[in-house]
Image (cartoon, rainbow, N blue to C red; front, side, top):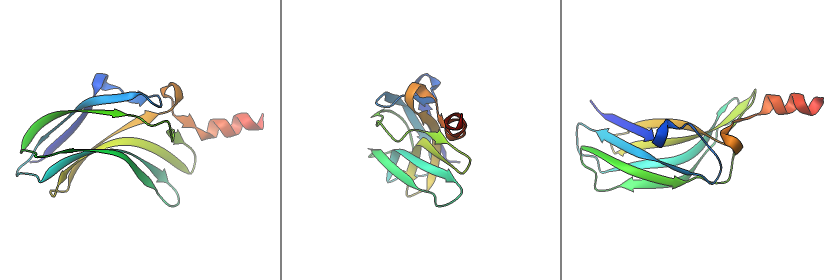
Length: 128
C-alpha cells in the first residue's frame, strides 16, 4: 500500500502573507518513484469555472521507496484565502509521487491575521 503524508510544523493550519511555512513530508511506496514533488498552490472551488495556480515546487530526487524530508516555503503576499456563497479560494500543499499518480493534500489558510476572508460578511457589512 502506498502512503504519502504532509505534516506542517506545529500542526498549524493558518498563516499570514509572507510568513514561512515549514514541515516534513514522508512516503512509503510499493515501488521506486522517479521523483516525489511537493507543490505549494491555490485553487478555487464552487460554482463556475475552477482555477488553480502553482506558486512553488520542491522536487525530491532521487527518491527511494521510503523517506522523510523537510520543506520550507516563503508564502506569497496574495491571493488571500476566501470563502463566499459561489466560490472559495483555498491554499494547499500537495505531495505527488511520479509516475505512480499517488498524492496527498494538506489545505491551509493564507490571509491577514490567519483568518479566511468571508465574502458573505463583507457584503452584509457593506450594506449597513
